[in-house]
Length: 463
Image (cartoon, rainbow, N blue to C red):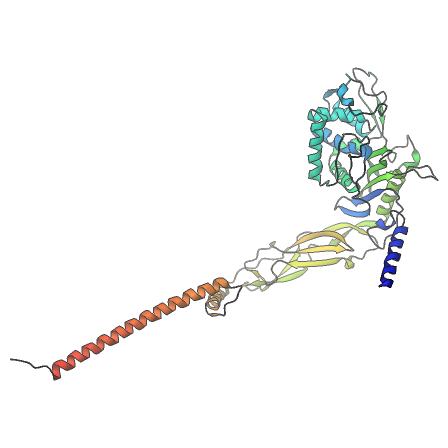
């Protein structure tokens, strides 16, 4: 017992000594990637496969990453060239001096919704988010209600947004995984992604700013204008965030050789040795690690039969092969041998399927997995059609009927047992009826014989 306790404490000590991020690799044989941020995730959005994870369900403040959903709903509202007037009420929760556009937006200024969206996404302006929300939903409160419903539909179970911009609020929280879900939704909107990947945007002149404004992205992965050391050519947006409470945050996607990856880094710090912001460097490291160690491969051919199932009452065919309903192509570690992927086959009718069978009938499913990674469940369908043997079916039906009636009743066959008792009762009644008729006939015959015998032998006749 003492040895077991000692082993347990040694195991706990070893776990505590593991640096942050090192144990987050989701494949045991891959090289490690050094991520020291509070939370991080790397995903292949094509299948939702998580390649790297660290505290992905831990609630944290997201800072200005909040703005990607505000912009998404604003784009979906449409009428991007419509003029919107900035009101004093739009500043109700804006910290003085927190504007990120120059000059700051002014009360009474008229700006197109399109330029307001660029102010929010590219320059990360806070007031612009409230203006967008009010314009889209009539009020910020109404907008937040709509936003909450949208987040719920996306599956963001650990997200509560109390504002439109991400200024500090301990009740305004989300997770790395939920942000990935939001980013994936934004990636489906071409207009949003154009804004997210914009390095510089010049706004139109307004009634109070005839020269317009030049907006420069806060995302150092896609611009050399601020800090060229961060540039990452494969990056495709998306949004930064930074407050004292949230730390440095970044959600980004990148593409290389036709592969798209999504990264979320939350609560990053500044490297004391290089003075570089880790949200950018660790995002870059995650992308390089993912692109270098994973490739898209075909792991399932649609034409190859995986199993077969017995066909009951089939005409000239007593089995049918099951093939995948589709092929499977997914992102896998380069070191992984496809033969090592676990294949779990489930046949819906292991005792056999009743004819007729039509080619394409779904008769089972295949689950592909490796080391806890689920590569999907694929339907298995009949590779060909099998007609019904009507003669055999008739013979089987007669045999089944006889077995039900005269066979031994079982707990599972209670209906057959009831039918059997009814039939026996009917047969008993018929037997009794026949016996009654026979006895009646026999008695009548005997009476007639007695009458004849008396008439000829004992009865006196008078003339």
